[in-house]
Length: 182
Image 1 (cartoon, helix red, strand yellow):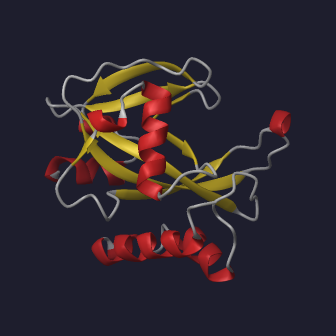
Image 2 (image 1 turned 120 degrees about the vertical axis):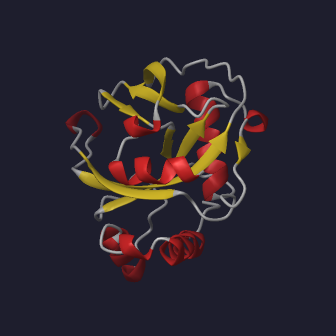
């Protein structure tokens, strides 16, 4: 995989430099990094693995949420890393385009957010016996992307709806609190 443990470790370190109060929340991720766990594979269930997400804000300061079929929840666009991803932020852009049709060149980073993600959320994913997956955690590393007049075309296999919402509807209060300053 093109994304390395060193890239993940450096990204988490930059994030914790900016948001030191979140160290406890990221403890499962930092412990896995200390153990040398391969967090890039979606088949790693030694606790969990890293995913990449897109916090998409339109020109009227609305947040894009998608309704994920498998989890039955409103989420940010994003997902698992792929072997040909050339970086964590590029994985978030790939997922954005796959799930919503918003092209890479249609998403522009907010100033100051191109190196350090705006959020890292560690959350549990329920077991999925159909895929032979035990309960595990995802560490979703999220970047902000601004879009103007986006046309959303959903990936019907995984996504069954989308909505432009206020920042208060962000998936976590932690993320919602960060968005007005962006």
